[in-house]
Length: 149
Image 1 (cartoon, rainbow, N blue to C red):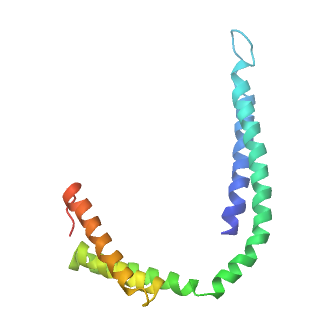
Image 2: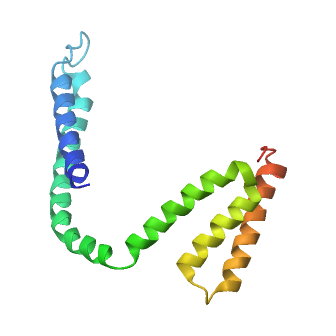
């Protein structure tokens, strides 16, 4: 993750520099200002370099600040929720074809909502699960004409 956050601005700086070099090497114009064809691409390349450098410094600053937030996030119940969501998604994918869209979606959403909201909000969980599943089924199969299993 850190490599992507730092790598993207570095990539953009290198890309901008290559555009700048390519813009400077554009052929001279025969009519009017000989350097006319390169003004816009050179200016754009310079702006890209400036903004990419600013982006790099911002990401370096955030990288130091985010390390504490990531440690706090991994200590709570978040890893358990992520794991259960992935597990529910895998089970949903396995039962989807066999049991059909409506039943498997009700099971998936119900399990997910009960995991997130708990048993205390059982009525809300059931209502949201059933109503949203039927709305999705109606929208896809009736309104859009998509054949669902």
